[in-house]
Image (cartoon, rainbow, N blue to C red; front, side):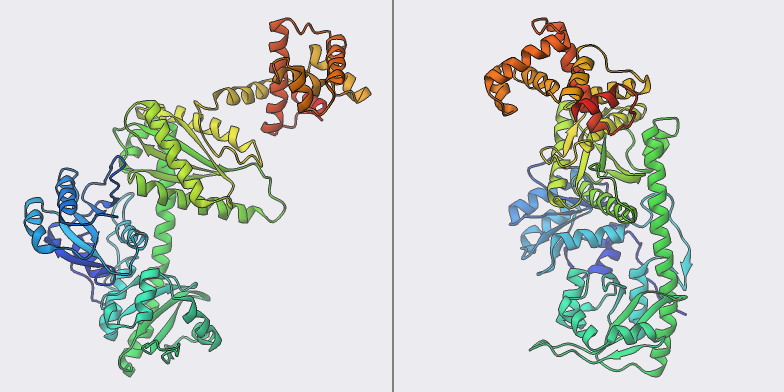
Length: 567
């Protein structure tokens, strides 16, 4: 049974360096043992307001030179950060005194690695136990679900660098000593998945077929791809009953002994337990986070405690609500739609964490809700939230057809329920405009009137109000004579009585339009010179449009009549 495990704290800087260095990180200055409890990841942006978790590892994207690095290290001391990562090369001699003065550890990102890869790996390592308590359970002497610790333990058993991969050849965890492997392994670590050219080669040679039908280690000779030099591999499938969860791969410089082959086989069983525990833990944490976000959004007596567990107590918040434009799924599309919502919710969580690490996101039903910490006055907070949401939707592109409604600022937990209601109201306005790509983000303050119209339509439907007055008479006349009088009135009102502009909008001659307007006044028995009559007609026409957006189906009420008139 595996008994080797790291002696460093799971969330400490020493453990991060053990798991990620030198594949991704190199320690330049400072004492990693001093940072025993890292609080999360922050990204430095000189042009934006900075919010870092306590004891953060800050990624100094675009920070170069001794002066700029020293200035940032001193600033991070006041922010309570633990470490700064910069792109090399770095003049460590010139920065040694600054590191001693600030206590900030200075690390370098390995050449060829991207900031996005580093951020993702750090968040994976530091996410254990973010919500709720810390699970001290161990499996085989390794903390339950800690795949990085397990990879290091297997690497010690086999005396070879290890990767643990899922069914799609994505890297879930890897051991230290990856510098002893080959360029293909390094490329896999940096990309967090096996390069496509190697996957194709394995598929052509039936490697995966053999791997997934065998319960013993499979030996794979070094691939021949041009001038690339690669080591032989040995891999074993990871199973839970009949389900293949993934595989474990070792890069070998010398063949495994029979004893090590047996140890590898036994280790695969332990990996299966850890992968199941890891998957269950992630599911449980997602459920817990959703419960905490729900409790906070309700704004009741438990909101303060829920916000405390989410790390969001004692600060103003905005609620963001993300959904998809109203496109009813056809039969069989519901699962695909649910998967798309989950994908977008996860992507939103990653995006918001990058710009505001204390954000919390949970998918509740069909809507992903985000608790977004803000500072400053309401107008500035709203503007920042709109900008952050718009940037997210721009990055996701048009594939998801997502829209985001933004609620009012909640200065205290009791106001969060109101912020959620307002976010839902704004989302409803946006989601009720299928195919309208002009607006995908809106704060409730920007669409308040549209939201009120939808709610007035709901009230009319609930009361089963019949369409009455001039609009009812015009609607009935249009149905009998196909006269387009409702369309004529709408165009005339929208053009403020400008006959030339109104006639052009409905593609008729101005003289024809003048005749129709006279017929509107006669048939509808409406005095178009009366401001009150014009306002009443405009409001009823707006409610007819709100019906189409709202998607109700009460055919007996005012809205049903309006839709039939609107044709």
